[in-house]
Length: 54
Image (cartoon, rainbow, N blue to C red):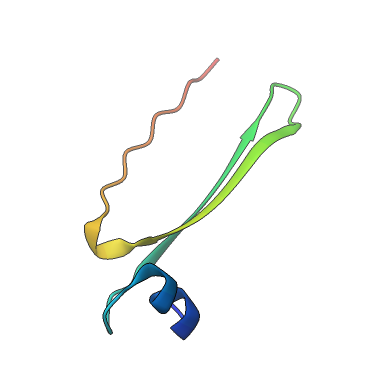
């Protein structure tokens, strides 16, 4: 559940949960290239992941 500040920033009514998504994109050597930390209203999200292997 979001804290009061998060709920206010996202304009969420009481009782709406949030989804916290942390993504770290790395190169072949493991060096981090990008980090994204996103907080989303969970009641309106559908997630789909695609991973390239090899």
